[in-house]
Image (cartoon, rainbow, N blue to C red):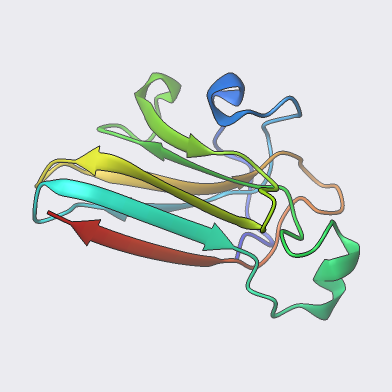
Length: 130
């Protein structure tokens, strides 16, 4: 959940297909795969908050952006993958190549800060295949 989180990270707006602000609340997960292969991320609205439907168009609910950085979490130039907000079915789904032992930082972000639809609950599914 990104509610109550601070907007510490920005993302490459052009690469993510975003034309809005890039300063919303975010949460970071550090993942270090044990095998080289492909990592698939799926993220979407978890449906746990009834008020969420009023914050944006269901099923996406809030303007969630998922971006991935490696090997650094703090450097925008290290962004290697991204999925912009509001896909038609409300679920971002994308894959990228990973190397065993290399850290990858998955950042669940939003396009706004302190506005309705700027944060909320979500699900994140992570799959790794050789």
